[in-house]
Length: 544
Image (cartoon, rainbow, N blue to C red; front, side, top):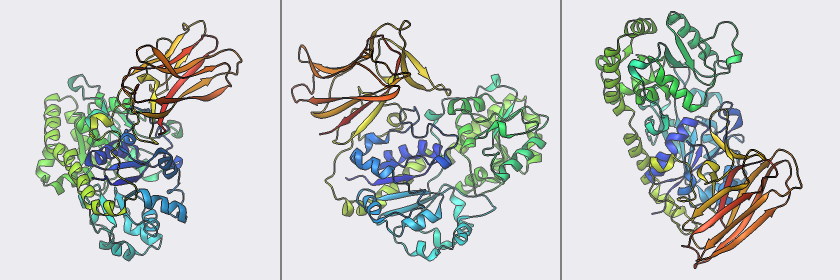
């Protein structure tokens, strides 16, 4: 069965971590757009495919790599969905579903040319506005949405339809919020927790409502040690703001919550918006105290949980009542442990990945007939058919994840490649980014010394990314690959005699014959020890 192809037009990092693997597991191919710089101020590694939490969508995609990159480099967000004829036809040939998050004007413009399914993925604005009002501001015709037979309204909360014009909520595909514990990497430390409460409020240096929520939080919890996490520039605050953590990397963010006594969720004081952080806290076992007027409580009510039950598991009428409850519960660990157990049982069912997966499979089945009619090229199996969170939340390794189809290209981080010399280089966030070799410190030898057991027959381009701090004419090293059949026979070799400052890419053209396909192959980069270099990535592309 041909898998539907979903173009993922969304710059929300957590959503991408969660929903791309979900749709792949449901039977779709998902192609994420490149990050929009205007929306990714704090997410500099958004497009870093070697990052641990970057979903490995390429392994499940059958579109040739050159076409993939051409699609992804069309700036649909910047163009607000208004593409020229050639760009539109490229999407119509290769894509079946356009997943468009948040922006009704882009959906409106995409419907003018896209023949597949435009899916409007919505997360709510809070009570101060809704999508219908935004459409009124842009003078959009809501009848256009109502009359489009493939348009899909896809809310993350069950109640998001209520404040909207009925014409834009047709063909509803409700896909609930959820989180994956394997992504979080932390658990509440219970009686060893630190004596502070945590919360998240983001973009306080740019959005007035967020600053108002912070001021409200500070007033009501001024006598309680607190830590405010989120995407904020700490330097933007004047005066006393010692409880603002500023932007942190993902692992630090979750560990700070896991170390706190409780997590406090104020949200936007709205039933029509929900952040992922309280769900993450619940998943990590952190006690969460939240407001009756919140997306967290409303989603639970829509699921069938009564207000009486919610009051027993951390819901409070207003911020005054909530702050008093924090003071009373701060040192009562029996109460907190019972609270987190019940939240896990009850709210774990509300924010269930299993429910979301069923909804994703509903979408795959809904568009299947169109896929069969629209698919122009013969169907090919993707490189990896059995999708699961375990395969999607790990780094690529050349022992398991080599490209199998023509045009596929995978990038491998050096932390997954065997080396006999050099040392790891980490980013400020603690991510492994390169391997460094320094003369007089590191012994000349194999910066890459990796064995590969099996490769499909065909022609491959095998490339290594090398960074030099200054130009040199001295010998750098030898990049080579060969096979043992039974003696070692070279496929290709590249002796690097000199190098320019900055990053350079060196490529071997490797032709794997039927005779050597199953033989052991060896990939080498021998560093001669004369010049400092960093190796950051290895690329393997199947050309034929």
